[in-house]
Length: 385
Ligand SMILES: Nc1ncnc2c1ncn2[C@@H]1O[C@H](COP(=O)(O)OP(=O)(O)OP(=O)(O)O)[C@@H](O)[C@H]1O
Ligand SMILES: [Mg+2]
Image 1 (tube, protein in one colour):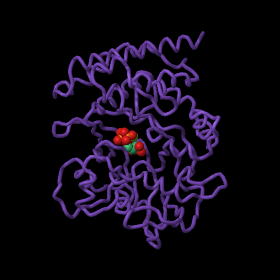
Image 2 (cartoon, rainbow, N blue to C red):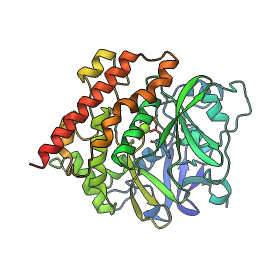
Image 3 (cartoon, rainbow, N blue to C red):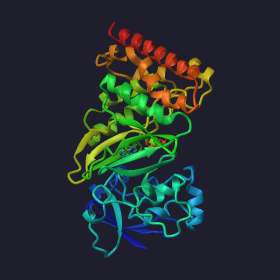
């Protein structure tokens, strides 16, 4: 079936979508090449169907998401990408959507930033309302990726992402937020929320109705990487070409944070840049989000302190190595981190109360973080010599 790919109210291209699988079969015509998703055009300016399709499918819920396969089976979907067709592909992270060709539906009428949306998918994925047969799939939950259990909810008129994780992730998001508060690093604030005795992290939508979050994996597709160019340099070159301000300063801060919290999952979909969806002006790198796969989240207590089997992403394999890419440490004031013990203890105490962690584990995490702060502080000091 033919659809128009829309960017807010601007028809950008006509595409043909396979209804049985949800993927883009064909790009029929392009009206606004500059408004196509970033990185979907090759060096010669030609739009690549595979790249557009990769971008489109990346909007769908990954099959590993808890509860998804059962929901697909029950409602007879053969692929999570089919859910994109049931919500016009609308998301709360950018301004793209689709409408059947010939339809004059407007963005104002259906976008999820200003209009409410169905809770059915979120309820289903959270194990509530599992017996509903007349599901309304019109929800940004259908277009939010990431493996962890999650849903969007409107609370007091604001859109919040509620995210689970059985391995300490909600607590880690909050600890990372507090560390970034202390270091004055721009970030998405996370807090804890309890639903039916399960703890989740809660963060407000940082994308506005006029902005797009463009993940780093799309940015690095905007030019060909030469073999002799490092991954860090390639990312910086792409950002400079596009005109994204403040990239190196942002990377310095992200690498430092990830070293402190021993983040193991800063892949290219876990950071990005923001642009104005109408003027296409780049606003800068997005505030730091998704830092939960850290602080030894999947490790046994004894492994946390040793730091063994702790790998970094996206530029180097080890944090110590990745730290060599930091161009400037002069902005870091380590003094506000002197209360790191309180930060970790106060944040993790709800988990202690529900018996999901131990004093010993909290102590191990604290000691490991303190050790990394001391290491970082030495590296920073030596960088001035
Ligand atoms: N506060 C937010 N505002 C807008 N979009 C967001 C926000 N938080 C997350 N997103 C979008 O939702 C996606 C999934 O969220 P997130 O990365 O936090 O989930 P995750 O399950 O932890 O991911 P992963 O699989 O990387 O562990 C992000 O890649 C981003 O596109
Ligand atoms: Mg993520």
